Image 1 (cartoon, helix red, strand yellow):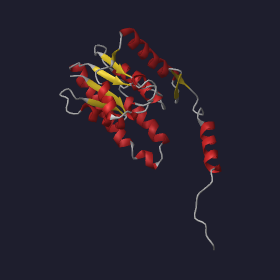
Image 2 (cartoon, rainbow, N blue to C red):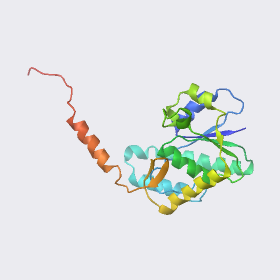
Image 3 (cartoon, one colour):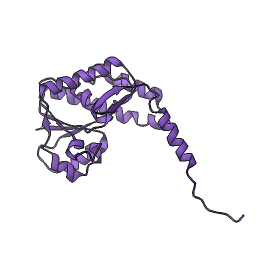
Image 4 (cartoon, rainbow, N blue to C red):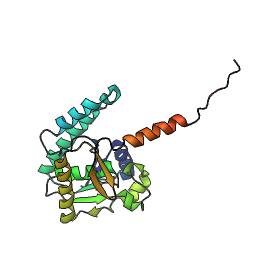
Length: 213
């Protein structure tokens, strides 16, 4: 059996549909977006506490309702890692060219037992640049790519794990993905973009009903 790892619930749902009734169907998903917040390896003892504590510190009331679901996903991941250590099976990681999935790829690799065989399926490459997220692919597209994942050679795997350790050492709270590389950046990186979007929105004409009163 080969375990398929995807990032985000939507991508997991699409991949499960794509796999249909395959006897080796096994899909798990990583929910925590490592683009922001303290980068902590999922193999560390305090991983869940550090990440959840940070999220709670910045969350509004609506976001706090999401935290129990995130916690349950983290607990399920840790349980799966324990089973994988006892009974190693091949793993395929679906990681497109975006900051969520590329940070996730590195974080996942750093947490996997070293003896586990890993392949990577990049839907950005498979779609010739059309798709930026695995969850954007239709189930029939995903079905056509199952089995096409590239085995991760030891040198590349070691480089990705070192890159994750670099991010951990930098201890930033925000990461971006540019030109095929992850970079730690200042938390104000998107501020000007957000301001411009708000200004553009406010300048748009508002449609409404005319009144004769």
